[in-house]
Length: 448
Image (cartoon, rainbow, N blue to C red):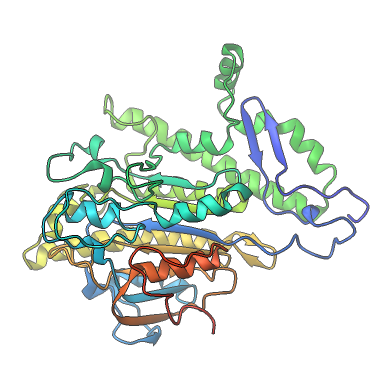
């Protein structure tokens, strides 16, 4: 390998309307330094937001410090990864509270989740300002193909839930470029796939027809570039490239199946083409693509709105035909609380599946999970009472060796969530002195 030309980290395999970024390969190391992997691994940051709060009784362990032998029910799916995530207690979204209502609790807790908004005595809008993910994207986004990716699974306008009590702009968006400009999430897996692997160039009618004809695999379009690249790679890199291409092909197959099922199961439904009817399938498709984007360093900043805030989605696949949001206003009825807990656990099961995939994706002598910090949580704790303190929050990954996981960290009561954001921005290499209602950095998260 030392006699071969080193590859740029931004090498692309190109074809008609297609540009596939590559994962980290040994050949990307500097020339004559084949024994060294290509520099420090980038740290990735993602936020996975679930709606309507969480049943905190089945979320919070009894002890602080190292996790107990058995995790609470909702966190149970994460037991195989107990040493890969951290539970944060007593973080508060103070700006979600209000004396006079504007966009509603659901609008404030979601629309301002990443913006550190502060409470006002009177207002009709959140006026959240730029969200922290976009502060990071503005500073480091030039190092990747996409400064950030905004992804979601549900839109209130499609669900028919937009009314005077809920502002679609706030319940549908986590990322804000400014206080008036939201960055709407991509909901359609096909749209996300084409964004990640398309060139963005306008194709001629002939080229578009050819692409449609060979839609079965974008890999066909880059076959020539792939074969040429493989001829200059060592056996380890050829294996890595083959595994990476297999992941892309697996996503394509999932998309094809989802699109066929959508056409069959939901004829005439007013929704983006190709969105799976099954929640778990939709979740897996989107997170598989986020994994590929992280693996190829296409983006290091992702927000993922699992379902829009205030969602009344039913989960018939687990035997719950009732709407999620109405269930959270359970009036302490045990049967309704049980259904909420089942939904919370179902969401966590999907997240645990993604964590497993990130951990299995090797990157040098570690893996994608170790080089990431993935926040999973909600903007409400008790969905029945709409409480904004002690928000359910976990952070998966080690952030490149910065975070010591496998434990619960309990901060002082009413510690602003913005303290966590300042700490995360530091780890992303973005130094900000003040953000939202932060009172400082979050103590105890680092290895020290």
